[in-house]
Length: 228
Image (tube, rainbow, N blue to C red; front, side):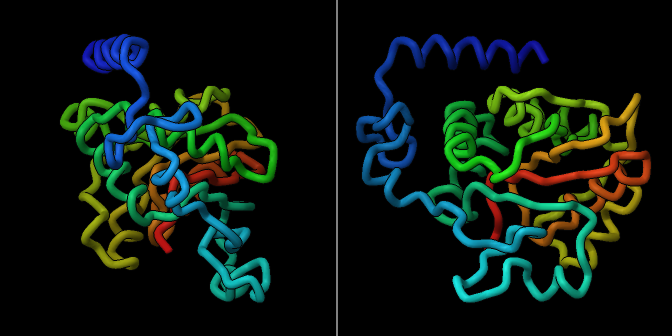
């Protein structure tokens, strides 16, 4: 992780020397963010959403979506700070696949502005497999947890390498992740799982079920962005 420490150091030094610039349009930053006022106004914040899976809901809908009422997920609650729409989608791609630490810092700042409506127990990042971690160079979920500056529990690990989820159906995603995670050490009774993007929820469900099986009584989920 020496490379990651070096990138953090360089990023902090550059940030201290240069004025804030919008990561979307390159105009001057606004309100302490690397976003201009216009782009900040266009950020797709998550609004009214299902309390269990964070899927956006119309104002007139019940607080829990029909799918979660019929088949409740294992997590007690899910909160998404943002929706996976422009420009958040591109910021996440830059952060996740191109080691753009400025984009990651901005996303964490936006998450801090829209935290869950409940007190967060220790955060647990959804981990990468060591093989993918070596290829990518860093674990974006763990880095998000670090940037959020809250207690982190790192006992969850990915026990087997899985194929990328992006081009798979919901059923294929579930099959791909079956038995993919395990736990080391004593598990806290309450945890908040943190991930970057929630699409079908397959990854979150597998993580939460793993934690529940080893004794965690209550698991909540906080994602940066939810695919609507």
